[in-house]
Amino acid sequence: MLLYTYLGIVESVENWTTNILIMLLIASGKDFHIKTPILRHVPSLKDLEKTYVPLKMKLDFLREYGIKTYPSVIDNKLRNDIAHFNFKIENNVVTIRGKKYGN
Image 1 (tube, rainbow, N blue to C red):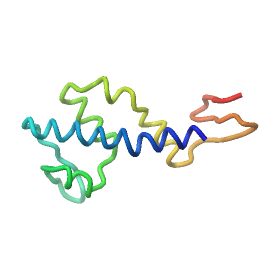
Image 2: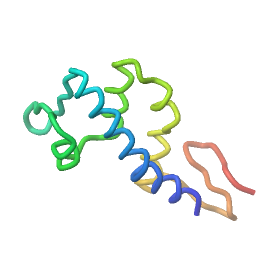
Image 3: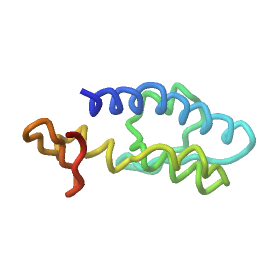
C-alpha cells in the first residue's frame, strides 16, 4: 500500500537526509538542542541517532536556519497519521483528515 511506502521513505531516506543537513548546520557552528528530561546539546550524528528526536523538531531546526525547501516536501502530519493509523479504508478508498484518496 502506498501509505506505508510513503512512511518507509520518510522514516529512512528523508530522516537520514534530515540528519545529514542538521550535521552540516552543526559543523557550521549552529547549536542543536533537544529536550529529553533535560536540555541536551547534540554535537554528533551518533548523539542525534541514539536519542529520539521528533521529525518536526528536526524540520523546524532546518527552517530556523534558512533551509525551507527541503522540509516543505515532507508532510509530517501525513507521516504521523499513517504511523498512528489515523486513517480509514473503505472500498479501496483511503480517508485521512477528511480527504479521500483512491477510486
